[in-house]
Length: 274
Ligand code: KIV
Image (cartoon, rainbow, N blue to C red; front, side):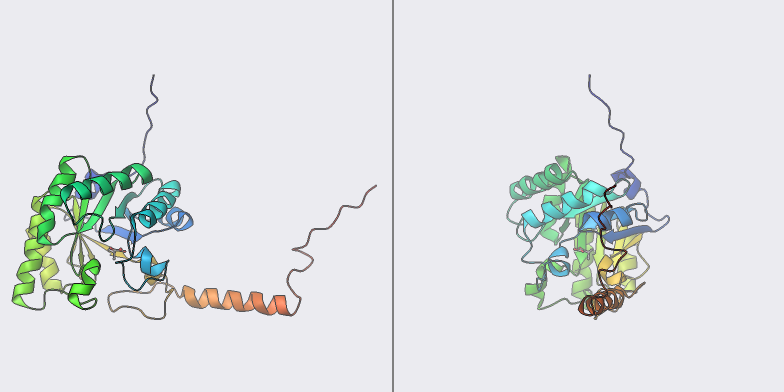
């Protein structure tokens, strides 16, 4: 007899149902303790390939590997219980063919237990979205500024500044939506374009640097917490953790050097033998 495991997690249907409703609260998570902290406070946790830049110190997301995504996906799945968890497919893991995309997406799903994958979707990627969804893999698309295309774009540049670019981004969004993605990230576009995309697609849109005209918002958690000196225009810092951590470590270092740490309270004492 098989035991039925009840999951309390949000499902793809819960996320899709947010279209036009209360905005979806989404954040990145890469580690078990952070996932535990964010889990009950967010609808969706993204194990983003931004992990390469935020945690591993890479200059862009291009160097991120499948093994990195799987390791961080496993960590996030171990401590999250409620949020819907999406893992990014890294650069080079899905573009060559739909078969390559299925092989790697299935590996991510099996080895992490996450509920969906995300791909950066140029118009060509609609076939990939369809191929994965038809085979049981929910896909979140990512349109507008696509960080994995930074080498083609010559940097992290907002999208939709020209008419041609606007049309291309809307076409990408429509193509991914028509191919069955359950939600899409819109990154780095002006408010009117985000509004047009949100109106044009049936799935919920999740904005980052894409105004409030989306069905939800996502930020890199470390940006929101103020872990870096530089804050992009679209980020609101809700804390200044870099300062907090710096001051804490300065205090520790001063205490160690002055032999104030460890003190009596932090030191084991041998129990006196009777
Ligand atoms: O990798 C990531 O963190 C992302 C978000 C910026 C949406 O894709």
